[in-house]
Each structure stands twice: as structure tokens, then as C-alpha cells.
Image 1: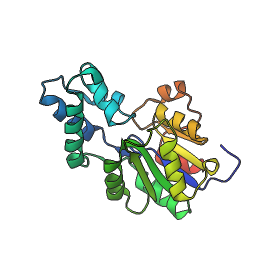
Image 2: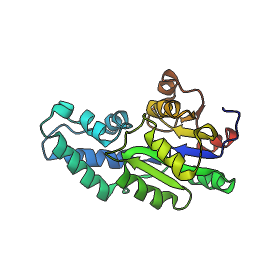
Image 3: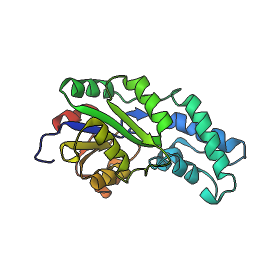
Length: 217
């Protein structure tokens, strides 16, 4: 961990703060159904998330981006998910307690996600209300994680610096994002990637429960 006192914590969203797999699966399969493409299982979706919805659909469609119906399926997915993104989705156990504790201790809190921005902001508002200060999702004009661009947007809005911030996430994308942004990363094992996978992809600190984070800030 850095020597300077941490004052800002940036969280990934899916697989870190919320379990959204079921709703993602439903919307993916809704988009695939109209073209009679093979259905995706929960495990398939778990393996395919983390790099934004375009990559999710690319990995879900036969022939990926070369599929002639890629753009249509992507559009159908986005429209369906925007209307159904909070049917089964919910925060992981103890996440709200963690955020409330961090907030009470004066930390600035943000979410930075590769999920499209029009979904990130409403989900954060619904589940976390005033606990999250800034929520930044993916927009076309901004490079997605592991590029540091969206992290820098959040830091700027919070008036924070990378050297006094940490990134918390559940994937190899988050580990690389933190590195690219000049931040330390804490990985979580309750999300969409296994502990062994995280270790193989450079995780230096892995926590198994949300409240463990309090021991590292």
C-alpha cells in the first residue's frame, strides 16, 4: 500500500458491489433469441463480462463482431437491459454496511465501470443513494478500462489524486486499470473471477469479504 494516507476509494460495480449476472444473462438471451442463436448460461455470462457490453455481446454471439447481426443484437440488449437491469440485481452482503462505514470515516467514494453510463448512474442511485459520490460508466467518446480515462474522470470530479486513492475490483481488468492509473488495487474474491485467476493476473491483495477492506485503508 502507498505511504500517503488514502482518502479516496474507487470501486468497480458488477462483481464488486452488485451481483448483476442474472439480469445480464436474461438481456443477453433476449437479444440472441430473436435470431435463434444458442442461449448463454450464467457461467458463460460470468466469463464474458468485464470489458463492457460490446465485448459481452461479441463473446456471446456466434462469430462475434463478424456476425452480421452484431449491431442489432447489441442495440436490442441495451434497450432490454435498460428496462430490466434491476429485476434480480442486488448488492452483495455487507456492501451497504461497508460503504456507510467508509462514508462515516470521511472517505470519498466513487464507482468506475465498463457498463454503459446510462445503466451505471441509475443503479448506483437506486442501491447506494448518497453513499457513492461519483459514478462513471462507459461512453463512446471515452476509453474503457483498463485505460485509466474513466478513473481520471472520477478523480477529477472528487478533487482527488491517484496517489491517495485505491481501486477495488473483482477482475484482471481492474488490476490493470489501477496500474495504468498509478493506483494500488485491492481485489475481491466474491465476484466473477476466482481467487486463483486473480493471483495469476497479478493481484497483490485479495479480500474475501467486504468488511475486510476496512483493514486496508
